[in-house]
Structures are given as C-alpha cells and as structure tokens.
Length: 261
Image (cartoon, rainbow, N blue to C red; front, side):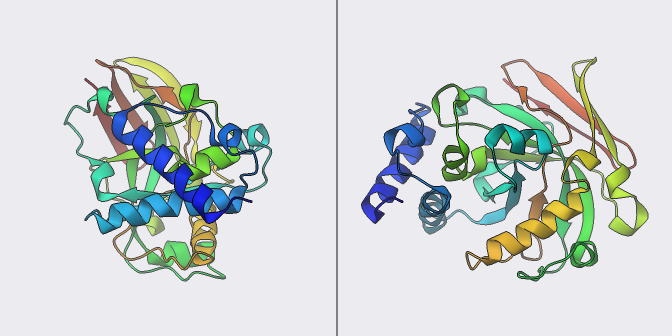
C-alpha cells in the first residue's frame, strides 16, 4: 500500500500524461507496492480535482466486464471509472486523435437512468426499473501508460482507461427489448471488423450495472438519475486512427457512428 504522498504523486503523473499526451511508465513499475485500494484512491484524486475545476459527472463505465479480460488481468470482478462532461462527443462531429495517447473504441449498450439507483444490495431488477432507456453507444478508451502495458492497478488508477462516449439516436425502454439477447456488428467504413453479443458482458449488461451500483456505494458514490452507464463492450477494442469512420449496428436498438481526424 502507498502513502498519501505517493498516491498524490501517482495522480499527478497520470494527470500530466493526459494533459500533455505524454504517456508514462506503468505505475506498477514506478510504485511497486501499489494495490487496488491505492489505485481507486489515485483515480478519485484526479476526478475530485476535475470536478473542482468545473467539470461534472456525466456517468460511469464498467471495465474488465468480460471473462476473457478478467482472466487476462487475473481478477474475478470488473473495475470502474467516471465519465465526465468533457468526455462527451456528439455523433457526427469528428474527434481529433491528437487529443489522446492511444485511442481505441468499444461497442456498448448505454443505460440512461431515470431514477437514482440504490447502492448496497442493488439488483438487476432495480436497474431495469430505474433505467429510462438504453442507447447504442461507443466508448472511447485511452491509456496514459506507455503502449497499453497495464496491470490491474494501472488501469484502475487511470480512471479505468476512460476517454469519451458517443451516444446514438436510438432510445428503447428496457421493457421493450431482451437486453441480453442484443447483438452488435462494428464496421470500419463498409467493412465488418468485429461482432459480439451483449451476453459477453457478465452474461447480461444489466448485471454489470447492478455490480457497479454496489461497488461505487463503497466509495460513497451513487449512480444518479440522468447518468449514463456503460456496462462493458460487446466486442474487442479497436484502435482509432485519423481518417477512421466506425459504425456500430445493434439489433433492436439502432446504431451509432464516430469519425476520427
């Protein structure tokens, strides 16, 4: 476990790396004693600083929500990060890749909450009751760690590698669709490059949102009405480069696209 001074130092390293687009060595190398508790506190140091500077919480994201990713990281539960107001991108507006270190995209089913979720003891039924609608989404992820050479503590401290979110136009109430049965196909231009199922996210992405509500409650945080929750990707992450145009088509809920420059 790290000292408060070490946590603050680690937070500054990550924040500077993000602001300068200058990736750093893994925190797990720089601070060999770092653990998961340290990592979440480091992330929160930077989140609090950004909120103090005028940003607002737009929502949260779940990471490591697939069995494959959990095995790769040697963990048995996901992690999470914050989505802030500065991370929201409008569909149809090109995104400058120069703003990021190693941008990638993930295909997700976004949950927009109409009511604040309970924390401890939150169930999938609670999530469905509180969700105003689900929406086709693309998450933009990035690593402030050189070449994505991350361990679990690295990605958690780095706000779960969060970088942005793009929402499509579709709006579907949870009662009107089998969320776990939704499939997604990702196109780069007109070429299909990935496909996946919502069931890849902990069996059902609603389960991931319930887990998140319980997890953040341990930090005194609630998933509030109006928040957008990204539960995890239906497909593998794809590198984003200048000139790339991606479109994710979902069964039952529509599509979302993003362009990079």
